Structure formats: C-alpha cells, structure tokens
Image (cartoon, rainbow, N blue to C red; front, top):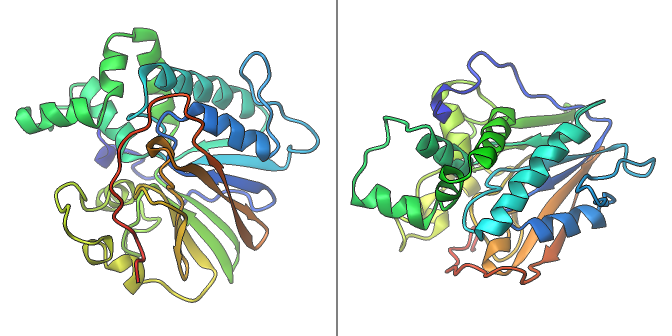
Length: 288
C-alpha cells in the first residue's frame, strides 16, 4: 500500500528514554560505511553478519532515518537489505534495538514493485524509475530479496518520538516538514514526514527558499527535529532543526546523531570507495 494508507490509527511512536539512540542518516546502500559506523558506536558484526549485543552496548538502540536503498550498486543494495533484515530479527528478539523509519525511496520502490495504480506511466516516471529507484530492477529479478524488502517495509515507522521530559524531546522523521504535520497520524502528515517539496523540480531555488519553514519555525529550545532526506556536505543545524544526511553515496560521509538522556552528539565515517560514488551538486540548507 502507498504511504498515505500506512499506520492508520497508530498512537504516538514513543520510544523508551532509558536507552542511547544511534540515529543514522540516509544509507543508500553504503553497507560498508554503515558497518564501520556501527562498529565505532560499539556494535561489531560477527562472521554470520549479525551485530553482537554485549554488556557494553546492551543499553543502545539503532535508528535508520530512511532511504537505506537506491543509488548504490546492486551488490551493495543486496548486502544492505540482507544485513538489515537479519539484524532486525536478531536485535529485536528481547527488546527493540533496531528501528526503521520510512523514507521516500522505500515508499516509491514499494509502489513500483506492487504495481501501484496511482503511478502514472509516462516517459518521466519510466526515466525516474531507472535513474532514482534502481532497487526496483534488482527486486524484480530477485524474488527472495523482494520478499525481504517487503518485510522490512512493513517494519518501518513514519516517525519516532523521544521525550525525556517537558524540556527535552527529539522527533525523528525522514524528511523535514512543517510543525503542524510533525508526529501526526493523518494521511497528509505521514506523507509530509516522508517527502518534502521536490528539489529536482525546483533545481535553481535555494533550499532555504524552497523550504522556508525549516528556519522560520526553528526555535531556541531543546525540542529538536532530526531528519535526513536533504543530502548535504555536512551536518546542518539551525536552532532545533538538524539534518544528518551527509551524502555517503556521493562520496562524502555517513553520519549519526547520538541521543542519550538530554544530550545530542554527532559522529561521521568517510566513504570507503568500495563502490562507485554518485554525482551531486549541493543545494545547502541553512545557508545564511
């Protein structure tokens, strides 16, 4: 089902505040960088491809902010889907240690492979399917991987809310959105939290003009909104609005925000050149 039909009636996605959260920006098939980042945050991968839970990391949980697929090589996309699937089942046996937030790429690939009738087939959508959603072709020829992806899709949340107290909270979504949509469960809000106005349709407009609410609604408080989606050359923060998509697949870095108690810290690992990087012209957020 398309994103507009997901999670009807769900209550607020509150996550426990007695854990540390490693919140990771857009992976886009950068599986090697993901494993390195997790290793540096205390999660080693064993020979079976499982993340080891130890006394040193049992208080930690992992959140992927969406867009874990597309843009990478088919080999790396396959490895990413398989790694996330087996570790989702492995890490969540006793308590929830791995959360997935739905990105626009997961949603669009889902729509393509399930023959969503709302997709209008024309030269533009055919071009976009090949150019932006290369996971579709992979899943169409690999039924086993398609099944794993469909299960991962069903595991995804639209948003998560970490609320320590009345003075400190963090809302996690894939895309930035206006505050009136943030952490709401209606169809329009869910759509807005997964994808904002298209940059590709407005290539010459600065992000700060295209998405003015990202800075107009920013506040000097500790109720933060962390998102990805907008590939950037570095972590971009203005007041309580934070973008952590640092363009791993474009040869830059994979970044995470580390939430613990009432603090947020950041960590990044570089692109490891184990696959071809994509090309990117940056449209910088908070460029003032």
